[in-house]
Length: 201
Image (cartoon, rainbow, N blue to C red; front, side):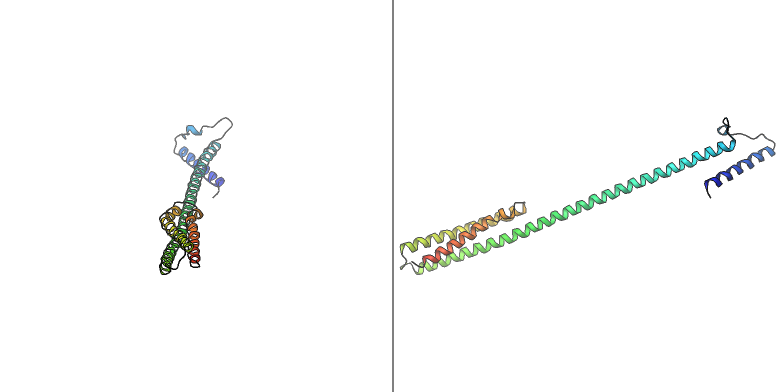
C-alpha cells in the first residue's frame, strides 16, 4: 500500500470516529495539536503530522544504515590491516629463513675449508718429515710458508664459524659475512701451492 492510500484510509477512519462521537451525543473532542491553522484543514494537519512521522522513520532508517555501513567499513579496514600484518610477518619469516639457509651454507663451506687445511697441513708435514734429509734450505722456507698459510686458513675458518651464523641472522649483509670464507679460500690455495712448490727443491 502506498503512502497516499494509507493517508486516505487514516482520514476515513478519523472521520468515522468523529462522526461516531457526534452520534453518541457528545461534542467531538478536538486534539489541540490538530487545531486548524489559518487557511488549513483538519485533514491537512493530520497529513502534516503523518508526514513528520514518516520523515522521522526514514531519518532513523537512514541513520541505522549509515551506522551499519560505518561498522562494515571499520570491519573491512581491520581485516585489511590484519591481512597486511600477516603478509608482513610472512615476508619477514621468509627473509629470516633465507638468511638462515645462507648461514648454513657458509658454515658448511667454512667447515670444508677447515678440514681441507688441516688435512693439507698434516700431509705436507708428513712429506717434509719423509724428505727432511734431502730438503734444501729454500725448500724448507717455502714449505714453512705453506704451513703458515694452511694454519692461517684453519684459524680463519674456525674463528669465522662462530661469527658468521650470528652475523647473517642478525641482518648483516651475506657478502660481508662471507668475507672470512673468501680469505680462507685464498690462504688455503696459497698454502697448498707453496707446499707443492717446496717439493721441487
